[in-house]
Image 1: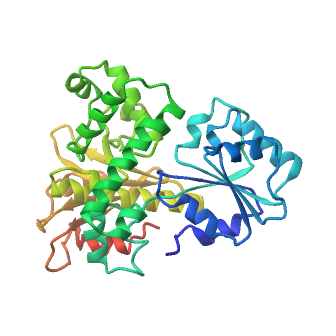
Image 2: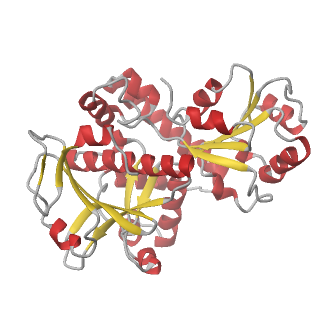
Image 3: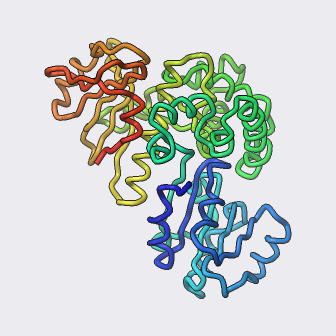
Length: 374
């Protein structure tokens, strides 16, 4: 199954270093190896490959050299900058990583102007539309998540086994490469708590009380889970950026099936992952920046998602399981952003419609399968 980023990356090979980041096991290595039949693959986690990397002894007759998990190498940016500046792109250089590479800014020199970055996500309904119907894609994404191995397996048993090992590797291996965290059990408990709070504003102080830990520690743990692509943050929208930093964000899982015991929250997480993937895809391939928020008034009126483009609100999106009656909050927020499209996504919908002076009522499955925000 070809990934949507593939043709764009192929076009950029040979222009600059290619950086591909994303959650562990979302398909970065498979994608990288599919770009050319002539490649040399070197993984920093493998001791033999580390020696080859340190000694610069890869096969220069190959078209592409793939460095996996290179960010774990001390001063990796300085090293990579040196290779690029002295040897150029013969062969082409491609770097992958399962942690956000910008978390390593403290080490090495800047690679500014020397790379193109692509963020690979697990499967979304849009990426699956040529292989599955919209309804089937959404059903499988809700049950098994979008990570290729459990999604393609399509059984609950395989998903549960995969999820246990996947999270264990992240918390007991990847995290230790990123931060010195001794309280692994606390991190596991935090992750479990978040599974039941998807779609709700999250207070680090409240989590700290539940975990009996210091709020600063919990805030740091949340950032680590973001850096390792376990969760992502959706902040509340406010014209004043400083105000946004003070308000409670929502957190969603890259793995849709992580969400526990709430069908509505699972649907909201599914839409969140679809929107985040689409916005980052547009930014990485077109250079057009957009941001994802939620919006809430002081008296409790709320819309699940607000998208801004060029800092202007362009979409208001509400997610429902079966309620096709227009959410009352649309009317409230529309007076502030009259040009923003209002869309209510309903999973169990008999007929789509457009309400006069109100939102479009759309099938959730169809809309995210055909998602286009530009």
